[in-house]
Length: 560
Image (cartoon, rainbow, N blue to C red):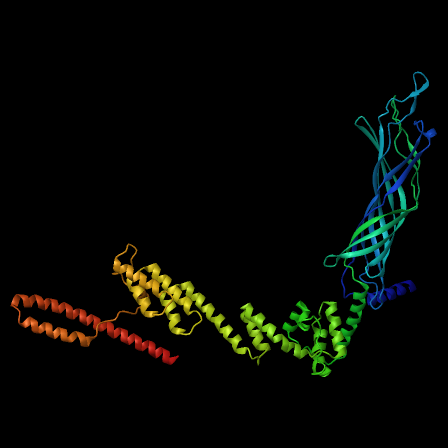
């Protein structure tokens, strides 16, 4: 029961000590290489070889490993400069030739005497590797220098190959191995976010000896292999330790300084939230902008300016404390600088907000986003630039309407826009749309109507050229007799009828002439006069309709 109570107490203490703010499982991958001489010894009295085996083989044992820290950061308050590791490694991976062209003697069963072996082109080579489990720690010596110490236990595998004339016999031995390694690492730099590249010098010491290692099974053939039933008395390294180079990738490393600062600032955040009467007075816009780029709080030199002469601490402390307590800036350097500002009393936060009005104005005007423009008006209701922002909003609203008119692409839609918006922002675009339709229809009346409607338009010269071409009778001249598309779509007449007062005397003169002519000629003249009178009546009606339409448009403008 006491053991259970003790375990629960330790667990509770560990939960309080664990750094749950930084959810970051630190890991490391490394590759090592250590030049070494590997010695193989076999007594000649125990082999068929005349001189036995006493070979020193130069190899470069390579090791690759993976380490994982089971603790996020050991303790909450304490500045612990080390990291605990668990991991796995495949070490001492090496290959080499032990013996070739052997000289050996075998016993001849027929003659009952020893004789020289004839298989002198045989080769004996090996492959070795040792998978192992690891545990250890890394200690920060200072800055970018770390010292890592690991201990491991595993199994050393030696596979021996007896190769002769393309035929290979192999035998594998497994032996226990134990070692300790120590690496002095230096952080070169950050490859990616939270991924550090490091180089180092590694020293390795193996403890368990490799003795009585069998290399080949017994060969019972009449002409046996020179390595038949070969057993090495000892396999060992020439030097007691191996020294080599290491490269590694460190994932999730946090410097001691960052951790220490994070702890201190975390405590201050708690104090602000718990004891201060500060309320969350900053808008989401403030928080998002500062999170994205804390330079919103700095001047052009990247420093916090001194506002202490103009403002007191009480004028800005509430807003700055509110930001630090509720916006949670992720960048530690930002928090550190702002807390330093809060302590020194240099910054008036509202002055910063006022200074940001210019930059935010440029930002929203360039965005063409109605939501951002409306947010600016809400955030700066008394801004001297309010009229410009409102004009921009109206322009964007008018743009949406004009896009709908462009989608219709008719004379009626464009002319309605011009009549409803005499000072509209898209008058030039509307004129361009009308003239494109005139060119597409290629009708004489439409060119004439364009010139009357836009006497100072951008396309006057082009319209006059089209009319001149019609007079000259060119192949591509506008059609003269076809109905105007503009009049057809709008339902209005743009023709100029003759004035009634000018036509009536002509009728009286024609009638007086008719009285002096013979009867047959008078009859013909009477028919012609009837036709002319009908035309005059039609022109009068058209003129009347045109006058009524003008009056209606004038009445609409007065209502607006």
